[in-house]
Length: 161
Ligand code: FES
Image (cartoon, rainbow, N blue to C red; front, side, top):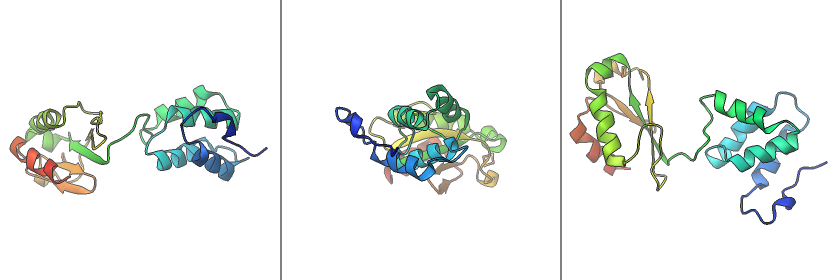
């Protein structure tokens, strides 16, 4: 039977993209990961409603889908910001003051590492060496790299996003 979102009339969540994804992977074994990847591509993260709905339609326990979603670092269970800031915590950056850069970012954004600002503009994450050790300490914002950072430079950089 074709999956349908009609039964969610009172629920404002848009299930249509999930229906389309499930239709694409219908009957395929081991579809959980590709289905979750496709859901994340649409919504930017994995909304709980979408996972519950997918579990129901795929006739697998929600706990299994949730287990996969939490096991892989590629999946995000909460909305992410429009801009992803990655602070390098590798050895070179660490010895050259990455902690001060993290503090400056936390202060400017008002969030902790792993969180997203309320306006969904920025998500702050930490990563291991990003291969630009000569420029330590380094951060990346989306695909842009900023090196030889000082806490003072952070404010200026953020203004451009
Ligand atoms: S340790 Fe930060 S770029 Fe290598």
